[in-house]
Image 1 (tube, one colour):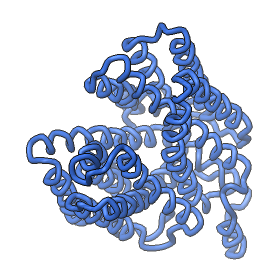
Image 2 (cartoon, one colour):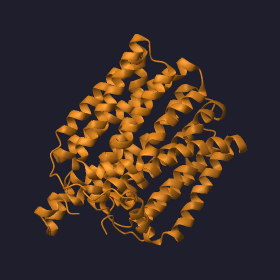
Image 3 (cartoon, one colour):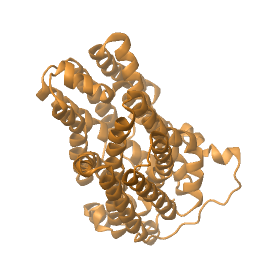
Length: 421
């Protein structure tokens, strides 16, 4: 569906198009407000996650409880996917995002008060985490579906790359800030997170765009599952989502980093911190590069090449006994992964009509979230059965095998030349 800018300039000449492409998405105020709001809410969530994990382990001394915390964040996203899509397509996406941020802010305030007065226990902590997970289940896909309305159509791939860079920046800064503030107690972390959620809410309120009419068809099984049906009918989009799903599912080694840090690389907590940050550093650098230099041609080949590189880097990480080499391979894994993420999200956003973008984005988010969670579970089970190094090695080999199979199953994805074609 054409954007407001497209309707003002339905057939731009070559010079106008080149001038538009030379602009930064951040030069458009709606996207600038969105970008800073995304950073604020993502940093707040990362800070809060650090505090919840540390406090939960302090209260229970149970590793199983930490698994329950992860489950409490994952279940709402998995259970609410179809509802999220309907809401994102039927209501003003800015209002939906703001409601979510208010809920997240109130949850952070409750955590701060409960910690300060000493009544927060393991059960109430899990309940609040579940509420935050439900809010994020709505907020994430809704914000992603909002991006195409914030910039002219030619700038959408660059805007998505900038959006990814915001998330990676938060992944690097959020845990560090949360850890530093926790020295003053969990209340300080939760109060700061609440302030950031409030700040994000105010930034989203400043976004001014043309409001498009929202879906008014009756809610039926067909409309509820329309996002899944749309993805299945578009081989390039289905191939991109499923390729990324299986690559992360098989190649993810995040859950095993503590074992690598202590038993294989013979380092301490500081080394584990470096290992956890390395993929985000590579991802941030590449997302900023792609924001400045968007892909023009051979998009399908680039995506397959990036996932193949991810698999090769995973194999090198599996057999490495050097901290420097391990950090380098993790940086490469983060770099390759973000190329796949930007291409996948760009295909989804550009090739999906606005009236369906919420439902399709919700399904996309559910698949990616599932791959992250199940990828950690798969790594743990495989490591328990075969050992840590063989588990990661098999994951890297499996990723490469998936790439070779997907080139045959999804030739439409391989043949995608440009994101808009």
